[in-house]
Amino acid sequence: MMALLGALPCVIQGIGLFFIPESPRWLAKVGADKELENSLLRLRGKDVDISLEASEIQVMTKMLESDSKSSFSDLFQRKYRRTLVVQC
Image (cartoon, rainbow, N blue to C red; front, side, top):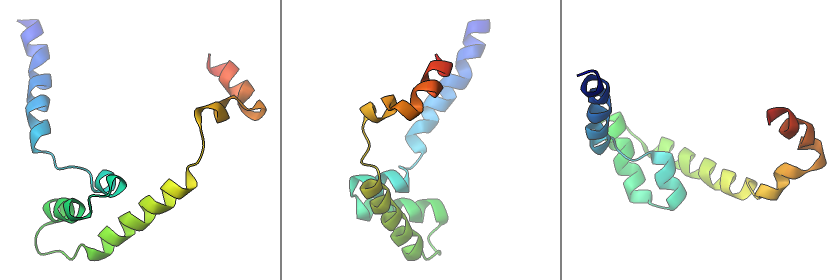
């Protein structure tokens, strides 16, 4: 009985995942502009002007993509060694 009661929140959350819209920022990252606007309309409501917010999200996504040119090997630079040793 306890296992069933413990599993109940997981089942409810699993069902709820089908009703959550995609993240507008993720949609901008993958280049789905029309879906981005539809998602914002669903989240904000039909009567809200989302054009400014949509353009801000697209600009920020493009900025972050051009900024993040780092790789996994960058973590092992000399300046990060102490942090990595302390973490382990």
